Length: 316
Ligand SMILES: *[C@@H]1O[C@H](CO)[C@@H](O)[C@H](O)[C@H]1NC(C)=O
Ligand SMILES: *[C@@H]1O[C@H](CO)[C@@H](O)[C@H](O)[C@H]1NC(C)=O
Ligand SMILES: *[C@@H]1O[C@H](CO)[C@@H](O)[C@H](O)[C@H]1NC(C)=O
Ligand SMILES: *[C@@H]1O[C@H](CO)[C@@H](O)[C@H](O)[C@H]1NC(C)=O
Ligand SMILES: *[C@@H]1O[C@H](CO)[C@@H](O)[C@H](O)[C@H]1NC(C)=O
Ligand SMILES: *[C@@H]1O[C@H](CO)[C@@H](O)[C@H](O)[C@H]1NC(C)=O
Image (cartoon, rainbow, N blue to C red; front, top):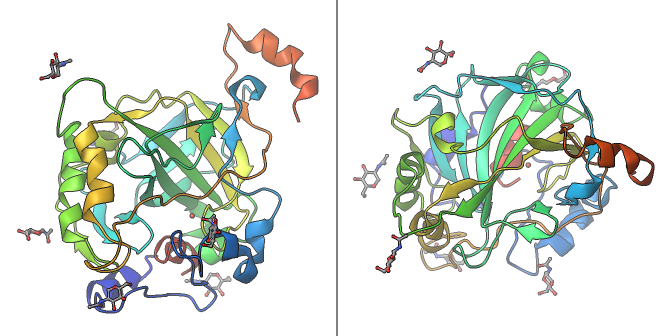
């Protein structure tokens, strides 16, 4: 079942900051009246004890052999990315039904609903949400998935402590002088000039698949922990997967996010620094590897999604 709001947004571009569910609070990254320090006032879950994002300390990640490879269904479909929107807090792409993940140590299949991005200011001011050993990457892509058994009813999913699963991919500047690479990212970013204002939304033509965007990542290597949506209402309903390898994107394309689209209209600020700060640490697991499983075993005893539209997909 698809939330009808994407269609509503297409005809409501003159109304900035459209809200969907009545229980969705007004929030932002960039104004003192609604920035992160205010979120918990209206969304108490934002001060919970399993909040995201976190800094992942790689040597403390405990080995867990149940973290098997994923099966990605229709990630190669070149017609599954349907709409791209400026939500006022991110760029979000709606994923068609039939796109699904399973395996990966998850309890059941999950439907892939949307992806969105977090960034700083070009490739020189990094803006990923998760950090690894305190390293912050240029950007982070989040694919939001909901348990298939809930059949797209995200109201049910956010009430389940594992109702949603998010796939986090780091984006890093490509070395060398390449421009407009990779091609899938060139196509994705070509839409940014059509969604410069909050509430703008356009259809995407068939052409790129999720696989075309997730290039160069060994998807069998990842970190896993239990956390939350990184935007209000910060529901603690998310099984997080953070892939170790970054996606490499040329500098010019990374720069387009912070120089093309605005928080509201063309006389407002460019959208920059759209990420939440690091939250208290959680226990992180990862695949056993022959070279490090021994030390991981020895250290065992020491270890202990809105966006106006983003959460809306999740709350509708
Ligand atoms: C929110 O805004 C206040 C007031 O401008 C500022 O002191 C604070 O650092 C901001 N918090 C965040 C997390 O940006
Ligand atoms: C996607 O992959 C599946 C399984 O490998 C294959 O059967 C299907 O033909 C592929 N679809 C496209 C559009 O490439
Ligand atoms: C989701 O499930 C709840 C509880 O069963 C139900 O009240 C609600 O109408 C459902 N929402 C949608 C969009 O189907
Ligand atoms: C990148 O461009 C600079 C200046 O044109 C050149 O000196 C350098 O060799 C190029 N590097 C690569 C990896 O092509
Ligand atoms: C995006 O904008 C360009 C230039 O204004 C226009 O030619 C193109 O049709 C638009 N694309 C979509 C998908 O609306
Ligand atoms: C554009 O956005 C700014 C800042 O949010 C606002 O003050 C202004 O009224 C808006 N202008 C128009 C034409 O909507």
